[in-house]
Image (cartoon, rainbow, N blue to C red):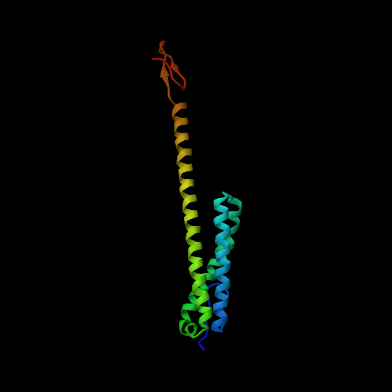
Length: 152
């Protein structure tokens, strides 16, 4: 049996047993999928507090996911010999996870577009306000008038 590679960071090791390693990976996928679902819901509900609270946990689980995938790839010969039923379930979970990740990505992009539009609108209003406050006109007597429209 091949020795499982040691992750480079503090993420957990998958089990040395190939079948157990696949089950470990399925748990990690399920955990990351759950975080993405909650994050997507927070985005759809414009719940920035929940969204921000999830970020640290999402990064932690994403690191575990990345480490787990790397470990499985490094042990591909061993994983090929694992229980076919587990491998099928893992593949199905990966497919479902991909769909969830795509929906999450689309929600994040939508939020970014909305924030960009909001920022542009705020800047536009600020520019108009400054422009109105700094406009000067001379009145009929030749005196400078403050902001706003004046007769010339």
